[in-house]
Image (cartoon, rainbow over all chains, first blue to last red; front, side, top):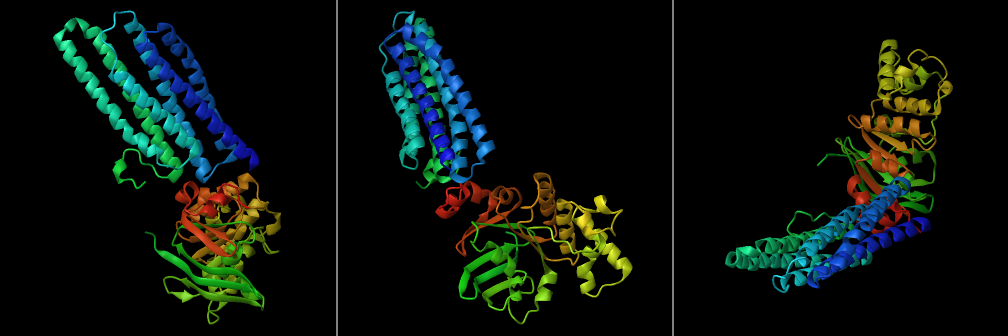
Length: 222
Length: 254
């Protein structure tokens, strides 16, 4: 059993590593935007293939473990969770890449106004990713539930960001191309938070053996 | 909910002074496959053998409690109940194929002859039906009168299943029926068991957890003579409720 336990430990570490890579991609993409650093944005886009490669490697490892170790119970739930959350993480990486692309486009133009909502959204989102991954490693706790609740804050900020920009666009239609790109970025962050929520839901499954996706979280007994 | 075919109530069992089953309460659902799993010495085979009154063969063995067989609600371990009668209704297939040193035909006909059935056409009909039921007929229909020992291991085990089916039992007990067989023969026996479930209630002891997972509807985990957990196989293998079950099925036991 020792070998299998070691293999599971390595699997957990690799998922965690993927999570760290995605977290930095989000952080750097938003930094490239706020600090108008297009070199950093390019860097984020360039690094995406590393995320993709690790995603594939983790999936292959999971299939190998299922075939050779025939995992049961919590081992089975750990491995299926790893397979599912790496997909979410990979998508988050893609969205960070999208943010970096928009950042490069926006950085080429004069700045519309200082960023207010987007850095806040990025901060919450990154914390969601970090907490979801912590829960993946440390197991059952309140953390995944906190992550799911925080998704609402991100949703609200997305709406507020849109309304503020809409007001500006009505006042001055010339800014529409720039303002629309900003709404895109907020939308990307909102999607990233959704993926973090998926991860948190899978962690709850991993711990409790119960799928809570597409159910009201409030009905779930913590 | 499926109806109950048999049920042990506060079942205790002693080999002399050694207690090997402790208060086992378990319901066996009708026309479902219930698998008993657990480490060696946990009592699962002892439990299975109670259903066939196998323990009656030794003088110091003692049952306590009840095993109720439905629908007539008789307690099959009661001394007033004739073990032969019990074995007519509840048949058993063992770990290693154990055909009698007789022809294929006579192996299957044996239980019927014991019952006093000697009419040739009735016997032929029953033998064919049982061999078909055990998915063996097509392979051996042209050599029914050859010795049973001429068959391969997997065929011998299917012959033993046919022999068990001949008396139209209500419950079929399997004690690790594939542990002496290769994966192909195992696959055939497993498919056969799953097909039998249409008419017969099945209770199977297996060391092979994957086998329990593949074929059973319900799984019961036993440890040190006690029933630890019983549940639907799907949920027991994905999300067991008891820590001991979890440790056993993930291979982290002891």
